[in-house]
Image (cartoon, rainbow, N blue to C red; front, side):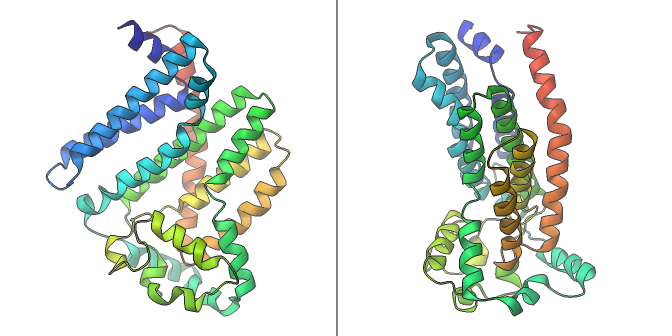
Length: 311
């Protein structure tokens, strides 16, 4: 009991939001257990994650051990991907539908054309190579910002940034459940000929294959549109990149211009490379604003709960 009470009392806001999301996913798995084949594995993994968080908090606090403290700081990096893959086993079995046709109609209503089709007119291997490389930096951007904040001994800024980034991912994942979609490379274009239509120079195909594998469609997959992750709306790449750009400016990062330039190119790349509709980017922008607005209240609320000794 002392272990549990002490651990909960010392949870950071980011730990709190991760635990809440684990419980949320577990409840969804229980409600739809007849549809989700691996529901029991998902629930078990969620509770292992919760136990791991409580353990790292307790050990880091009691022993002041460097390794435990680092585990507590950086467990979030692989966790984001673990949650992403858990959703893979949940979204399509539960929803069984995609909304790409509606997203396409919204894009056509706004522009009177399909943006990915129009951008093909300016496609060239040099631009494709650059944008595929930039697109591949996505998961590294929050880590780079976090390392910089730690090196500058800005622990409060690091904790807030970690919370906002993880909370943003959580909201985008909930968006995938609400609006499942697979993106224009499967609907408006032929996925099998994507490498031929958008060739790069040296490493484009390799980087593209890494992205495909991360979305459970490695090379040679039959009927990839049927099994690819339903993760087009909102554009998490847009939402999270905008959050990193905002936080880098807010906390005076020395790399803020790198984040701004790289981030702008990355957001453009999501449409040029056919991963997203423009409406996905608009959704990502709204999710980014909501993340910052609501995240501030949740972050301060949890800090107040801790300091007022409710545990």
